[in-house]
Image (cartoon, one colour):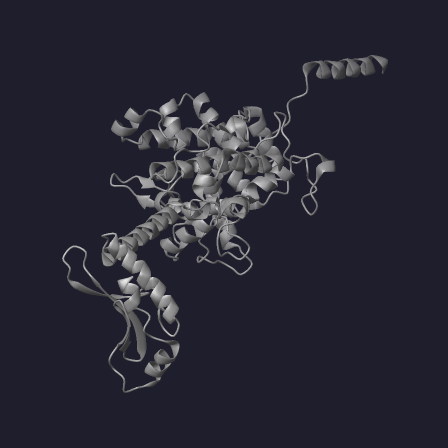
Length: 498
């Protein structure tokens, strides 16, 4: 009651006069320690209280956290209500200043927790960017091994942009469920793209394993999903061209309408065992273009850069699928194919042009031909006439062989089979085809690439292919003896009749 009697001295009119009087400097006292004080052009409400512990006088500014906590935005009634709150706090033995500090600290702590929660709540799109930057970027390990991916994840990014980001890109990683991901993979499967579904599953599992290791999620949602649940277990192809089919191939290739460069390409795969991407990424050793520029073009075209040196009879692949270099010793047969390709380079309509770096150039000679071109041309010539694609070759059965449909990769398998039939050991064949040695111990301790043995193996294979591809080998079989017998009988009968 005593405090109430000493308060509420001011009126709204007194406050207005005080605010308008530029000469007035002394604060106005409403009683009970409540004042209106001038500070420059602003009028602040302040309250004088004593410290409950020491009894020392303290000045408390009212509404300190409100940008509009000054007069006239805060009226006399607002100031008196806030003063009563502070009086009650002080009467309870609580220091209002300490109370405010605790409140501010609590707010800051809550903001920090919210910020940390927001940082931990990573979206699928942000997770992909982080995963790609750390795991997919190509780099060299301390032991010289190539890590990451050659294209820095460009193919994977394209697949995610097409199939994952539109539905889940902005969803927090921790909110993604197995069913969400399987729905997207099922959609890919429904398109009939089983291999794409399996590749996408592998990439997703790797990305979520990356997130799990960094405590961004509590569990990998795809940890129990296998390829059998998505695109199915890939069927291992076993197609190999028989010796008779290689002879037949030599006979039908010239009239198949296949591009001359690709005809040579078929024999080069058979005689060297290279992959299609390595074949189409071949460049001439005399090219004046910088290797870095050619490498960049190769990466963009999804082929593996290679250097063909006709003088040294070598085909060097600086980078391959298993992330190590590989050098093919060109046999006389393989060398002849490259010489034919070099002749095509020299006989371009514009004349000899040694600036064309690519052995299989595109129409503009600005890079290699599309990596899928050879496969499409081989496939187009192994169709039923009724299934001919519009605008494609009419020679739909030109490359049909008795053993069934074959691909460029089947030629590589045929290379290994022919080498084995020549008595070449499996370890040498693996080196010739640049296979990764299965045994980790052997990979670690046996560093010899068997170069001399490879050269002998390639020469033996070249001799075999030359024999199979010769015109004599491609001739049709001799007529059966019984036919000759009939002809003899007819001749004899005719003679008797005569």
